[in-house]
Length: 564
Image 1 (cartoon, rainbow, N blue to C red):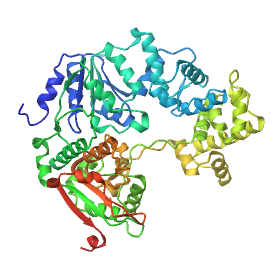
Image 2: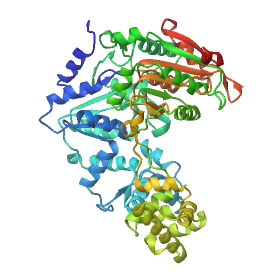
Image 3: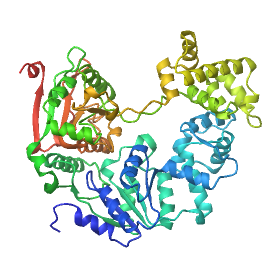
Image 4: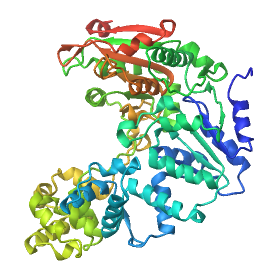
């Protein structure tokens, strides 16, 4: 087929009458366009688009919301639990992400030691007895966690197949990052619905974070019950990036890596990316001599390149509320770059951030809503010694927490709640009260105040107007870069010991992190490594040897670079 882009391939998928379909395709292949075309055929029926994290679900909602219910697994499960409320949970049940850790500790107090209960639930390896004990404790708190919510719904649907909701089509995004229990739920949905699964095993990054595995998409691709389709052209990246990715994959496989990889083409799209490829014909490999407080060359180099960005590109990024520059790398390196850029008044683009993680504050927030809340008291009482807490937990098999709190502790907590309530209503309290809540909660006052106000959204359209017209920057971890893109991408810390972590034992995950990082760039990608890290000599990443020489430009950055 002599196509120049994915138009014909997308049409084939959209027009297919197959009930079980899978597309394993590289970055920038047009999955959203594919979803839109499919939904045009199913616009008269209710549809579902499902993925695993909020920012991806929000992206789908923005693009597909008129034609499908777009949501995460956890939102879907919460809805199903509300519709089919199990005995033991009240209709006003809460969702608390850290519930498995709380219950794991509680069960150990009752003599039931279960190691990493959340991982066992994700991998469907938890025993029926242990799951029963977990669910009973979850019911006691009238709370579900993200992981156990999926298991509850899987159990509900297995016992009651007629309760599985019916859709025109179910669209599943980012399947390469699903874990075993999520795969189980998708399998159940696919038995009752037409389904399209989309993903890319080359972009699987969540194995250590949520027990996900690219194995599931690889197995599904080879499943005879699923019809596979291709989307070979990349409409996001330049020729240099596409050729780099293909060279890295070929080299990795020649070294015994990516052996179970789904075979797929990843083609440069001249029709879409020709002009950008002419303007940015190479991936930059940048050797930086040092990065210290006195010589912050990583940030200084990135700023020097930002000053050369076309104003039209900057304006486009502001109009689209997306970053002009994406910096990907290890936390300490990102922090040094952010510090340097911030001092130069560069606007740092911040996505929605998670509320500060503090179980004591979590508990107090619950008690502000309901003074009798069992989980609220359980979390707040982590201010006690472990022995004191255990003695109270031992008595909660038959009694609510509020009946078991010593009077002195109850009075102290209620005094803290009174201060927090005043802070929430008046946004200010006196210095002594500030000190009191800081000592009780273990957070500084500004963090507490921010959490109470829930003021955690900062984006480019909220930046001061004097920043308008300047290139914006987003800094991200390798995992956090999933779902992001920017005209200019800087991947920092391409050193042995960072990426890869062990140059003598390069992993599939190391390779996939580099592939994901490269393919965030819509115009130009630069790979930066340091000659010295923390006053020690450091080698460039072994992965850089796999880059194609025809599409690489070497750059040397040291003191003299900035004197030119």
